[in-house]
Image (tube, rainbow, N blue to C red; front, side):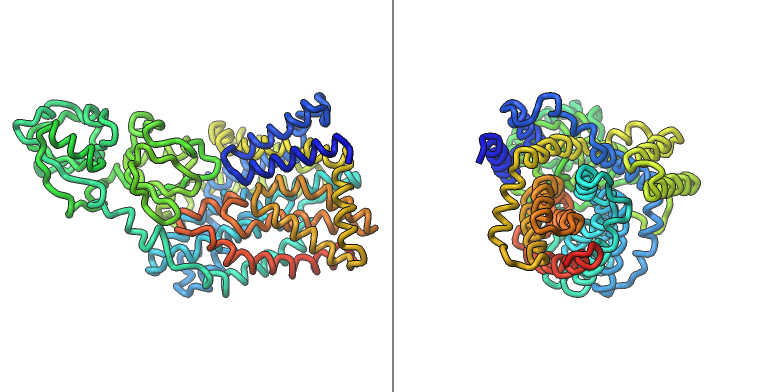
Amino acid sequence: MTTPQLLVFATLFGALVLFVWGKWRYDVVGMLALLTLTLTGVVKGNDAFKGFSEPAVITVAAVLVISQALQKTGLVNVLVRGLGRVGNNMSVQVLAMCAVVALLSSIMNNVGALAIMLPVAITLANRAGRSASTLLMPLAFASLLGGMTTLIGTPPNLIISNLRRDLLGEAYNMFSFTPVGVAVAAAGVLYLAFLGWRLLPQRVSGENRADLYRMADYMTEVRLPESSPLAGQRVMDLGKVEGVQVVSLVRGESQRPFPTAFTVLQAGDVLIVEATAAKLTELVEDGQLTLVGNEKITPEQLASDDVTLAEVVVTALSPIVGQSAVSLRLRQRFNINLIAVSRQGQRLRERLVNAKFKAGDVLLVHGPRPSIDEALSTLGCLPLRERALDMVPAGQTRKMLLTGGIFLVAILAATVNLLPVAVSFTAAATLMLLLRLINLRDVYESIEWPILVLLATLIPVGAALSSTGGANLIAETILGLTDGWPVMAVLVVVMILTMNLSDIINNAAAALITAPIAIKIAQGLDANPDAFLIAVAVAASSAFLTPIGHQSNTLVMGPGGYKFSDYWKVGLPMEIIVVAVGAPMIALVWGLS
């Protein structure tokens, strides 16, 4: 083993450890891996950042922008329009919803497709009086299955297409992945609809979703008597006390949910405050307040036409991951209150001001509707509130049709090789911007920069694995261990190895690491390299065993109240189905003997 090979293997092993550790975000890990190989001379300085100009990176960015435009103009509402009328049969509900989310994921970002369906699933579950946990994980898995079916469905497909271009001089077209992907996706959706959901526990946010709304557990009513020194002060003066939030004010016959920070308190006012026991005692003693009680506090007391309570889920790429409520200053910066936090189905009992947010946490926030909507975008959270299932936003029909038309033309141009995929979709995204189908702010907010940085940094790392002979060394080891095995059996081994890697690290990273090895194995077997590349693409999108393998899995963990073990119970049969259906289809479509 040469020194460059040792450096590449050590760097990849270190990156793998950091990916699993999860302390640093994967784009940071990717940059560290690239810098390590560059500073040690394995990757030339002039080649270090060539990954940022790769068509795969540009295409991913363009697809994210187009996905946002499809959502903003209401086009995706057309596809979910009939879901409110699918009835209460569980298998029918799961089948319909998984089919729709898989279809959406084939043409847009996986997480975006799932985010659209989360409120719909919760709405249907609430109407049927059923736990939403039986719907959410199947939806997450269906979003991964749908991504397998087209070139733009998921980043691994674009990566594999670029590798084929480098290897054979021609990239895959828009629907090269479709025959195998559709077969696997169909089998997976049927499994989820008729068996998979039955393996899931009946839980949502703990034993009952209403746990978050037991206001008496963490809110109290206090009255300001004539003697209170707080009379004449403003609401913001109470808010300066760490751990105390004024969420509603009752004055005479009027109820004021979410009083403004400048509201002047008067004797006789009744405040609904959220505070820890220690802070409440301090507030009552210092302010000479009278405890009224908390048994009658309900969500309705905190809402009005303009003010609402909303459940939101923290995404894996949210900037608030690792931060606390006190460091974010939610009331001062965003004009909202944090009422409760649920993690893996259980409401946090610790002080909210000090709780560090994690991906998948469900937050109960309170404030004016416009403030919440604006805050969600900045905070990287997704709403779980109910949405209309059968409406296209008013006045949006023209924009919807125009967006759909531009998107279809881009697909057609890429399919018939009129334009490269990156150029076609970038042109479509730019045209949507110029026609004001999407604004500039939405463009930049829709792009998941960590994904782009990860791809751009690991592309040179993957190339170094090949150029140093490291991929060939690993391939020779696998070929030695499988000597005499049928080609199909070796293909299955490659799929299983890629799946296992994708279960613990980002699927794009898994594809970048295993694809060069798969190519060397195909060459060693004198087999069709396309078969092995497609196998890697399918397997890289099959992260079904853990909540950390893909953002979609992480996203449903909090709202569904899932535990780590719930994923492999449903995911292990799914991965078996992927191999059982995918390997024969690959052999059939790509001529593997």
